[in-house]
Length: 327
Image 1 (cartoon, one colour):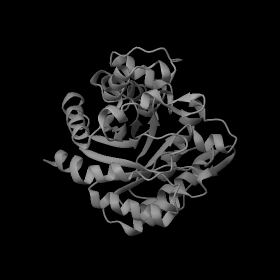
Image 2 (image 1 turned 90 degrees about the vertical axis):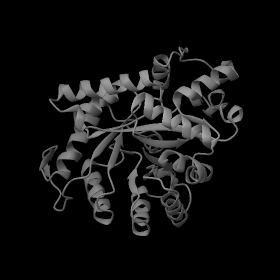
Image 3 (image 1 turned 45 degrees about the vertical axis):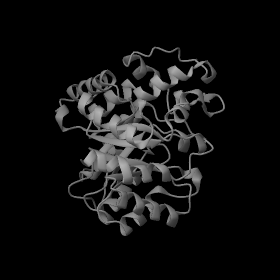
Image 4 (image 1 turned 180 degrees about the vertical axis):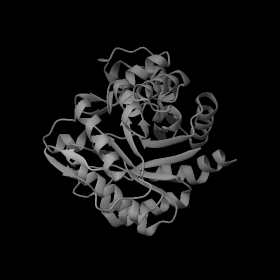
């Protein structure tokens, strides 16, 4: 099983680069660094610096958007990153969330996202593309081009990923019925475009909190930020996948209404919540039950704690989770 982890850009770039080196030493397959302009630090500068200080770990933005970065700019960034870390990069795109919000813009519509993803992929393949009345092209491009994945948490984005992207970085939980339904959406999108679904890459976003089980399973009873419960972060599609897992909740449920027992059931369906040994066993079960082979660990956090480095998760992976998966 390939295991990646989310690393934020909130700390000074040299500190983040050293942390990526720790991730590589701990045995992670990859690191995805989020593209938050309002942090004051750029993800592509950080990724390039990390590439120069590492040897094998996969490096990618998680996730960029096409609202604050034009497709031509994204193509140039993807090419540049591939030049400094050949064979260990890819691009992930989404409608945008905090970065778009902080810039005072609206998220990309599905129509715009479809056009922009196709444009980025065509530019990376060496094609000339019309942007308005202007023909745009990359004078330098990678060969072969790095994959462009769509980050998806809902059915419509999964359909779109199958239709226009090289795969999906998807937040659907770990329950086998939820995973099966997500895959059906990817296949439907691929069939719509006359593509082979087997060619699509799958990476499953897995929320994780390391610690004493009863304590860390309180996350569904918390708020991500005022007005937005953790269970609805980053989108309310979480409720869709929980229903597939047999947990049918009203989407306006408040954190205070969730019992400790229900919170534990939610955590078991959505991700890894507990001691390192339990998290390793949960991943092994997900591989056995749902044939999951590549995961992206997404440390549980609030709006206030979003930029803390996931030291506990890296320590747990290096000492317990990684060795147990390997054995």
